[in-house]
Image (cartoon, rainbow, N blue to C red; front, side, top):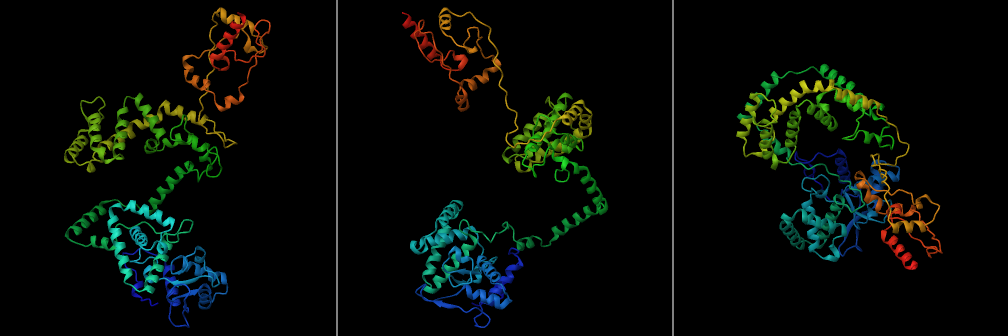
Length: 566
């Protein structure tokens, strides 16, 4: 095998690669030399195919590595040879998974991979379209020799769904490659099939195998295209001059001042970082322990926020509005101040900027009609200059929703500064914020010793309200007079219970038998007096409301007693 130096060159459009691949390529070039002194001797195997295929064993490559690089340990040489095999510079002829781990024996035969299929080659990229063409080509050939494996068939079906618009192109390319392969000699055809199969085994390995060729994100613009865009012309020079003039007018702080401000910011926010201050993760650090109480007390919306969370709102107005809990508290304060429209306008503009493009134009018109119109009852306090800029931008960009996303920024910035300088200081001095700090300070944070439990507030079932005693009918008095028992629930004077209006939600929960209620509910045995009733050891529930059983069983017992009395 002859490798030319020009074929190994990498141009500016190729992805940057590690230097280890260049070292492995030099190693493969030294191995593949045709002279028997410095390269590996290739031996022909006649029992594999009808034509002679030259190959070498694991012993040959391990001995060459030990001799060439003075490696005394056999395991180290086997590890180096295994890396060459897993990265696709050599490949086993049988393609068994065990053969990809090179051993110091002659159990497996290997061949050198063609330079076209080496990793990080310009023409040998392993994109999905080429993989789909390769699988389509194999499916068009003999099923017995070139049939797809189950994981390859699954990948092929997915690729056909992804590239549904290119299905004809994939099939056409595959048929052309099959027709070109028929014109080749048998030995060349066999070698090309082995090389392609080895290439895709490296870049699309079977399930359970390690993918050694993890590629980074795909480039959408090549460096050559970017260089063409940077070509200088008259307009580019004018733009550069304008940029440099603005750069001269822009103030440039000293590096010492920047570092000083960064240190000040770090000292200010250090107590709020659970990685830097252990007290910031009370009652326990969830990154260290299994206790999840920290996530529950610092949830997005809680009943009482933590003390550090409330203190952080006083640092800056930005910390207050970016926290949903703080934003809700600030809204409650503005509602009392009769200036709720300011924060509502700010929130609507934020939702519009982060929303879908199809709803931008409608949302802008609604915001202007709701908050910027002079006839609106929720008109915000915006100066005439800012309002004129917004209206002018609306007229210029009407019908262009992709350009209307940020036309309300001047008004939003004006309202933000108004709340920051006026409403925010009054909020920090208000009784609402002071009471909130006291409640957060007095909030107990106890560490749970057991990890079970969701921590959410469970709805307590209310005790049913007692019902006033009512006058019983004659039939009920007769039944109650014949029932005797020691349990207090059998007493005639036991008041009946009914559910009040507030407990209507619990009626379904109490009347529906659950698995736990069926296990713990006792069975009451009521023995009636034989001379009077004639029902010895009869078992039936007393009342539907007392034990939760159907009323039809009680009515059946009354009918039996009446029949026996007659």
